[in-house]
Length: 117
Image 1 (spheres, rainbow, N blue to C red):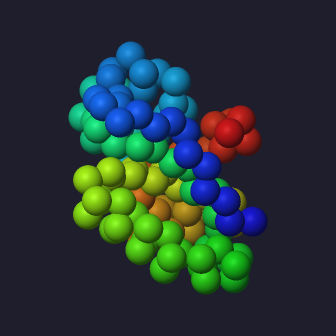
Image 2: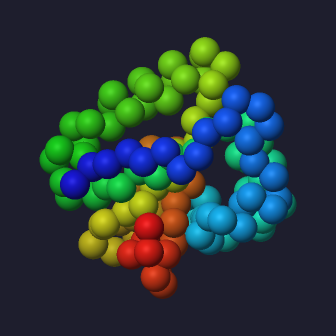
């Protein structure tokens, strides 16, 4: 089930307020929706990847230490990556706990955004 998909990557200024409109609604790990402006600031000069996963999936949880190492190495090399959690968890609370534990933004549990990705 675990999959990491790079949404876009550019070496220069990466995200603008206009380009964040291509992304679905994004929340912080507490479930608070981010405005296009705050999302743009957060993603500026970063590559963006979606992490499709679930806390109940052993392959996913076994993969995550490597994912965190990759994220840290990318930041240290001057090529930071913002990873957005797309959960297949059993509940909104489970997804929020996973996003918080992984220190990731998340696609909302409710609605069609997860299915559309």
